[in-house]
Length: 310
Ligand code: FAD
Image (cartoon, rainbow, N blue to C red; front, side, top):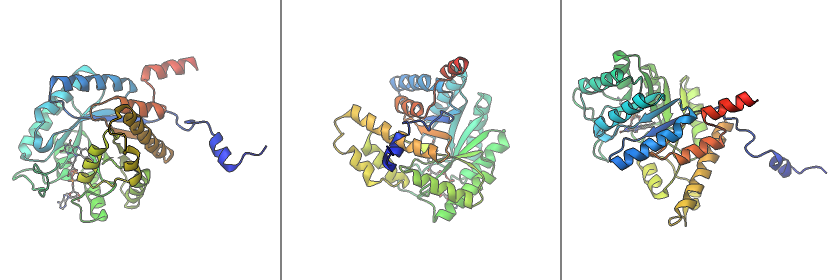
């Protein structure tokens, strides 16, 4: 009655390896309309019970969402117990203007900034430092740390930033950001676990001792993800495209496929030792919630009840 190798592998209980021993964080963008604000707020309320390490709110290109980002982060600080992080970029602003925004965050109780250089205001142009502005993300991190003891996260690129002349230059840039005082790096999204593991190894080999948190982008519309991937130099594997062919008119099936792919990616990352996942939620909670659930993450109150019952 010997099991074959394949049977033995299959005999392991499904999802037995995940224990919920993970940290999660969720990224939102500032809403443009009242309806979008409602959706965002519902998402925050859905995800809050998972006890995220932080939630962050992006900053639109060229500072276009400065007020909305501030209002959203300030509301999270006022109305929830979740640590909130504000994204901030160097684009189209002097140091004084950015410092003022940072000071306003500190006064509003925000203690965590995601510090970024940002993209040029017009797509396709090369980034130019604003006269009197911060030169890049490393420069911004230094500026922020001089203003207040903010916790600072920065961006990292497993597939290299498109502006970077080489992978080595990109690692040197990450090192510069950590040396400037950053506390962790969150990666650009990627589609295959090996991409992350190769990058994590390269970071360690370069002697950079930083927490590298994978950024997870659940694919809800393949065309949008393909467009975004092209913009940020993220490779789109052929298998991913194949999985979405024929689902254009099947929104519910697409969601299920997207959740399955992202959950599979996260399970492999988990098996490789990852214990903090950052989700690009696109202001929708359900995909991120389902993936967290599959990884064993439960609402904090439910967890306490289970502990009490044990
Ligand atoms: P940096 O780390 O400063 O550098 C980017 C590139 O330029 C690197 O390749 C580096 O090698 C090169 N470089 C930097 N300085 C120099 C120098 N002095 N000389 C030569 N080369 C140099 N964008 C937004 O607009 N708003 C957001 O809210 C936002 N959130 C993000 C969140 C995450 C987790 C990530 C991964 C990205 C986010 N972005 C956001 C996108 C980001 O702004 C762009 O990727 C931008 O092009 C680079 O920003 P950075 O902070 O990585 O730049």
